[in-house]
Length: 260
Image (cartoon, rainbow, N blue to C red):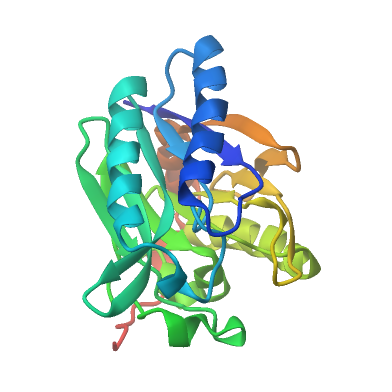
């Protein structure tokens, strides 16, 4: 398969209310799929059932399992992959976990590596220590979460992936960095780069303006949205191949080892 049709779900979130957020998102997806019969991938924001909470203990730990089962149900019903990050508890430890659910309901995950210390995320959540690659419909995907965007070494394309996929709760005062760094990650890694941000505000005084986007391997913006709803875009494996063939910048990349 040479193309991947992607639906970016940009929405406000209800604070600490997973059932209401699941209902909100499902209503948008139901309306979307009434007129869009098939998409390959649905991308939800970071912590899409709770908001970016630093008190994960306030969330019933069983909600993570309920949300994953809900994602599996949607993936099977819509015949699409669906992904986003949620709060997960394992033992006494919490993770900000990116979950990727395939149409056959198989689940793969990535735990956020760069926990946002200015807000206390590094104290509330365990740092993930593994870079993840997901293979889906002929594309190799590197999933990442929000603050990871600021650290280019962690996202460096040393494994020949095709798509960088960021989900976020990125607030308005630093939205210029979000826009700039998404484009930069696409250019330096010669890959598509997709970023999905949320909308609205939270009880901590943060406002989230969206700016969900798709960039091609040369940094051209293919999609940009500030609106509440679902935006759609298509990425093409043949464009990656032709671009890297003509401008093989990755052949001259530096080689290094990340010490964890």
